[in-house]
Structure formats: C-alpha cells, structure tokens
Amino acid sequence: MRLSRPIFKVALSAVACYLISHTAQAQLSLGLKGGVNFSTMNAQNSSISNFDDRIAPNFAVVFNYRLGPAFSIQAEPGFSSRGATVRPNQPEPGIIITPGSPYQRTLKGVVKVNYFELPIVAQYRPRLTEKLEAIISAGPEVRFRTGPQKLETTTATYVSGEKKSEVTITQSYSGNDAVSTFDAGFTAGAGVAYPIGRLKVFLEGRYHLGLYNLASDNNNRGDDAVKIHNRGASVFVGVTVPILK
Image: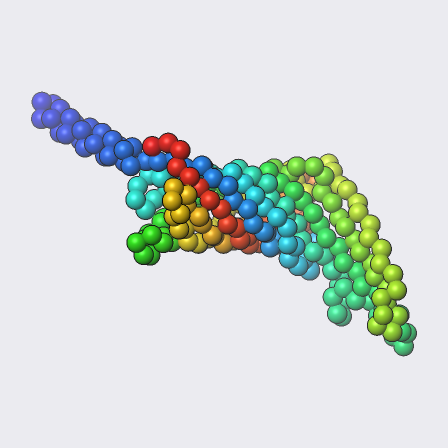
C-alpha cells in the first residue's frame, strides 16, 4: 500500500502535466463558412428511386478549438439546403414522347428540404509548406428540418423541338406527409488552409452520409418499409480568426 501511493502520485502528476501542456496550446478561433451542396437521396422500397443531385447553398458559423499544433475540434452550426432532383421513369429520364407525334413533354421535380445543421468534426492539420496546411476532417452531424418539405414540379411542352410552354407548381408537405424533422449522419472530407495576417482562409470538400431513415416517422415499419437517406457532397470556403487562448 505504501508503494502504491508514490506510483499514484507520479501517474497523477504525469496526467496533470499532459493536460496543462495541451491547455497551454489550446486556442479558440471563430469564423464563417459558405458554399454549395450537391445533395441527393437514396431510396429503398420506394416508387421513386431515380434521384439526381440538387445544387443548393450552405453557410455556418465556425468554432475551432485547437488542441495542439496539428489537431483541433470544430463545430459548425448553420443552415443547409438539401433534397434531390426527381425525374420520372422513362426510356430517356424526364422526357415523355408520343410515337409519331411532334409533341414532347419534359418533367422535372425538385425536392427541397432546409435544415439547421450541426457537424462536429475532429481535424488533423499537417503542414504542407511553411504556411500552407492540409485539413482532414471527420465526425458526426445532426440536422433538424426548418419549415415544410417542398416539391417543385416543372412541365415543359415542345413542338418539333421548340419550347411552347412551361408550368411550375410548388407543393408543401408537413407532418406525416414530409420527411422526418430529424436526421443524423457522418461526414468526412479534406481541404487546405492558408494564413493571411491573423486570419486563416480555408477551402474544403466533404461527403455526407445520412444514417437516419427519413421515412421512419410515417408509420413506416416492416421488411418492406420505405427507407430514404440523405446523401451528397459539399464544397465551401471560410475564414477564422483567433479570439481566445
């Protein structure tokens, strides 16, 4: 028992020194970022399966807490517009052709879902040159739908290849008719950062893997249940400035 006390004190002192040294290196930076999403959806057991990308904006506030020379934790609360482009199942997607007729119609639907989004990523930032550093990010993210889900349907009519009319109808869905208000998933990506004075400018691309079934709130159960997940990539630029050390 007498021998264990010195060992315990040494171990405690080592842990304390480790925490003090890393706390001394810790630094909080605040910033902003903005970019675009290339979002889509993955559906199983659904009458609609041919989703294409939808391009929409994202922006967020950035809180970067540096733990050491090359490691940090970053939280990014902000706005993210997601969804997908939907086309009907036709021989040529989105085009309806009447055989022997000069008439042609094109159909396109766009699912629009806006979220409050919160990724929390761990970052490894090795230096590539004296100033330029790489960014490797990975971590979980959650999102909450803000407002109703919207479906924007556009029908265009052509005669002998010339557009004659175009009609767009927007419908809103909420409750059990819409996707879940909650979503969770995982994101990972890479980028670069470069200092300009006290500012640090960064560019990053990420992939987003939704893990929560967006159709699970719609009394949707069993082996044949519809499963819909958010998917897609994003690209953004941003800037941070240190505020606390």
